[in-house]
Length: 296
Ligand SMILES: [Zn+2]
Ligand SMILES: [Zn+2]
Image (cartoon, rainbow, N blue to C red; front, side, top):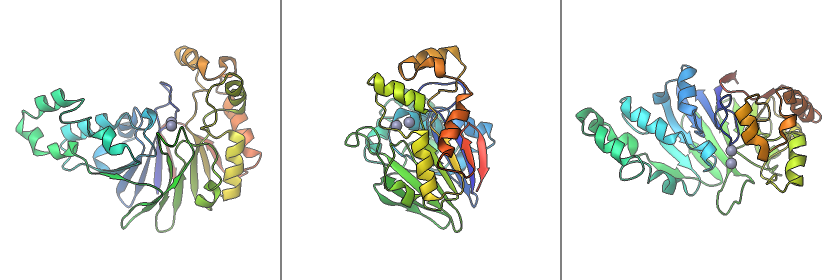
């Protein structure tokens, strides 16, 4: 499997980190996991054709995991894609997508472009089939099997979130979605060739957020991630959904001030985060960066 990290940031807008998105290619097909802001652009920047995406699977409906969807679909429509990719998402996905296209947010644009016969021909691209999944099997074809584990993120009754396991004949990749540590994760990820797991904030920021009453508990700390990866005995670990704490951009730093103490923000924190993860997990480890390709 070829894994490309398209977006590795958390929810702030960051010129160095796109919002969450991972592309997995297997047997000539591409499966896209989350489609945060910038995902389509970064895909093309990595010489991956967006028209090759057969299926999009959303872990949850936070905007930093979904907001590039109209860009992706409208762009594909304009690029003569024949049919819409299949879209899989948790409950609420149909209601999120239905008002985006015809008769919805981009209706004026769509009607204007659809005045041309060429755009009429493939307008079905803007009418994607959406399949709502819950825990268990999400999809299975001749190349991959994808299963979901419910995880623990921001109020589950509003916004369900799932980790996803992608298995080919002989490889296994697990993507955590956004989550606090969940007791069933090590079993779910047991022996995976690659675990891509969120570790949004470094330990120092978590202490700051707890002290200031900012929500902390929807994410996994580096120390907790190390314990999960060690218990799961994964063969490689990528820590992702990086909460912008390594940004040197002065605007990002200012905007991040409510979320973490900006005096600790530094690229050097990557070493601290890696060290905290490595206290329990001793295998190959990467702190995610956009446009990284990993062959599993
Ligand atoms: Zn997120
Ligand atoms: Zn989220």
